[in-house]
Image (cartoon, rainbow, N blue to C red; front, side, top):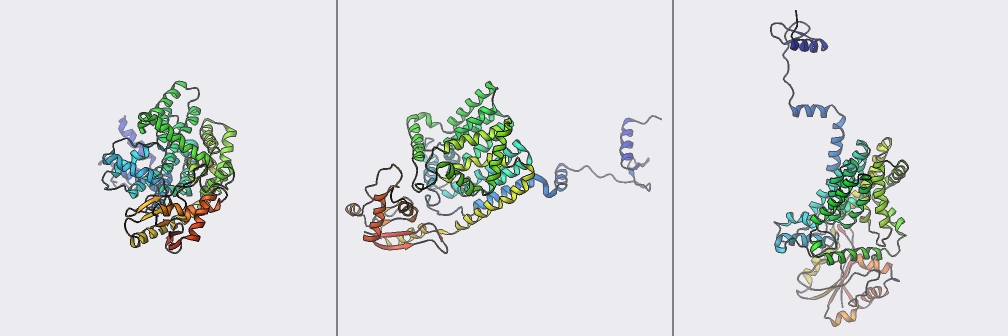
Length: 510
């Protein structure tokens, strides 16, 4: 008797499972001969759940979800610090958020300002549309979203470069980096640039040159140093000249699409961009006694990553030793970007942020060390938690503002350091921030302030301490603070402690 093909398949299946088929019902039988009811096929969702349950703790997907959740959670702690004032957490917020708000409240698409490119303002603008005034909190929430995306992009970069364990290491490195956590709460350009770097490098590693070109342009649209991504783009497209040319063209197009008015105001844009770079190269108040740039920026990386930085550097050395395509893409970006940092005398910690995703991926290449690296990342995690705890307190300058509003008559003429809150009900003369090769602000004189009708002077330790620490570089500015203490009457003073964070703040009557 010839068995039909379907019957053969069924008999073979049940033979392999140790069962027989009941002739009358056509259903598989138990070993005792009784009929067995076949279960219905599992649904797709059920199959996915079964696969998840079959892995330990849900596998790498669950690990990534936990990382993203934890990264977002720690970044939301302290997100309201210094509000409603936009210059207490990070002064650069005042350059971004009001302009983003103005774009959707009658200002049109032209920001008329090019110290930074325009993309972050365009990203924030839709979320400012329903706000009656610039909302720093809304912009900070957008910043946390972009920061969390940077963690996910770093996982993608590490996974594409060296496998799944490297992805977890890279994502964890960015998630707990103290510098990344700190700037994720502020509506500034450095964390979005880090996101663009991670995405662009991941696309280069994957060989998607055209998309990588678009990502390079978008990263540069967040902040001008994104242009250094052209170095690994050339490595990724080496010998594929036509694709490389298309990628470079797309990079330029993406940048111009993200900041279109640099063409309309090209002279202003060029001047503004060069001015910002020149200020960074000349230095900034507070860095006068720093080590040389290589040591200063390595120190900043150490403060962000802790001992994991040693493994990152080891991964960089191995990358240059092996010189695979992936190795060179990551390593040459790190070197090109770091070489540019060596030209700067302003050693801000945020400048090293674009290096964190590729360094995390390079550290993750050592699969056997992955558990050790994750354990070492507890160090920067504890630093980030410590910093977040401070931000749950109220800034001293907010207390000073409340006192001024309650005790100073409206319309009083006041002089104030640049790190103080705004006083809408008062007539405020803003004192200029001192800095290397900057002209002395002639208003930093008690006699001149009196002639101008100034009655009160508000200063903070955020500026005063840095000036006095570099007295030889700023003798006239230091003399101004000395005169305030000697000749003016201090009518109010507050310092950090207890439920207060921030610098000490005095108010002088002159």
